Image 1 (cartoon, rainbow, N blue to C red):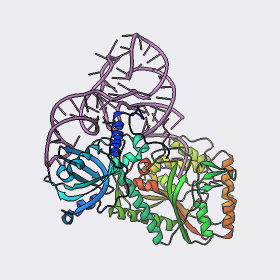
Image 2 (cartoon, rainbow, N blue to C red):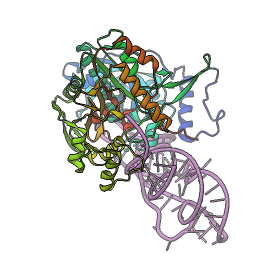
Image 3 (cartoon, rainbow, N blue to C red):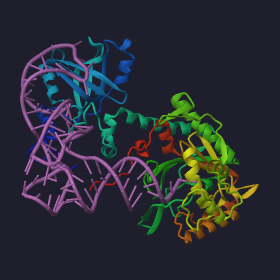
Image 4 (spheres, rainbow, N blue to C red):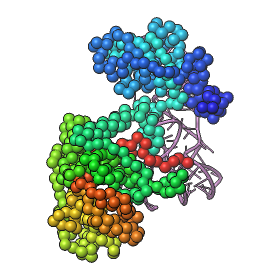
Length: 496
RNA sequence: GAGCCAUUAGCUCAGUCGGUAGAGCACCGGACUUUUAAUCCGGGUGUCCCGCGUUCGAGUCGCGGAUGGCUCACCA
């Protein structure tokens, strides 16, 4: 920190009045021998504690830090609201208590300043629980004005770019991220209780596998090699099953170089878990139980309201094979059709299908157009075609389909799970098929991972695996319509 | 990537037919010893997102650009 403090007009002519006034007060404090950026401060109570336990705390002394959020001055007495992480408590200042000199310091106090006070807890005539301040310490002088107390900060651009201000001013935003933290905690304990070991696998991948997505690339200088940011941890977690761990999970960031929308951020959080000797049905059960468990912990109920719709998360959720769902909602029965017939059937429903589209592409289009918008209440869509499921085990009774499922809630895909393919020979063929698609120009097709095949050749137990999108789960539980509302710092274009 | 919309004071927003900008809160000065969206008196603090153009004159009209929002596309 070599830069000198900028304190007054001489240093920076361009500061506007609001900023200048605060810098002048800062200078005044220093001239009085007061450090405007205090130090460690020990608290005896939080703001909420004072309110909650007033019956026993009345007339007791308290010491607490917080941020000044509003001030009402009345000549020789003044009021202020002090906010900490728990809530707000009113401060009462009077010249009789503080003395002329102490009281005069209030002139240097601004909304936004972080202070520590000591004083007596009492109730005002109007009934407001307050602290009559005996000592006031400046812990951090605020040099910028906060947004208006009544209207707050609404400009979404500013709210995301300056999330710190959003968090200061909008208590409901703070709440969202507290709930996010509780959801993840609750997920961890849920899985730990069931014998899952939390692990960490690499984020820098030589092969971006485990999902169909365009990866970000980066470069390692010392090794002079390009690397990918992971799009999924799947192949590493299954190597751990080969290694002998019975149940593992990982919660972490994934990176996908794709479009940004209200449901997509380039980096997002996923929880993946694997259960040796299990299968897709175990994973469906874990999914519905986990959602219900979190809902109960958060709200004491397994129904939640999202954007005005009541969503019933009570297990068990219905299971519906993909082809049945398509037939039910679009009237198209794709069973037994070849690529050309499937294209024709979809076109008959008014979809714009490309000439070379394969059966699974058509299926995807029909599903997106006719089925997805209807999947408001939780449901597992099952039995995806093998071409779009290169890591899932085939169904015993239909080798063209896989033992796979996707949970849908409020029309979003909330996750993805399946019985894991543990046959290295089939896996290698699937990868080769994906490579062929890649050669056709599909840059989201899976890459070949020789080492993963080798791992399977050592023997991986039959297993169930599941990936859950944490951000979408948090959106559901916090009634947030945009993923940006559940990310502290959503990706934004830099301002020029 | 495409369409639509938005961008004016620190914040939230007005701004008529094209005539050089306003309100509330915040802020500054003054009064006030239990207020609480405190009140009362006085003060408008501005790159009207940026650039170019039309015009005697542009916050306002046209074109280009930036950022954001929504929808679509892409995408699990």
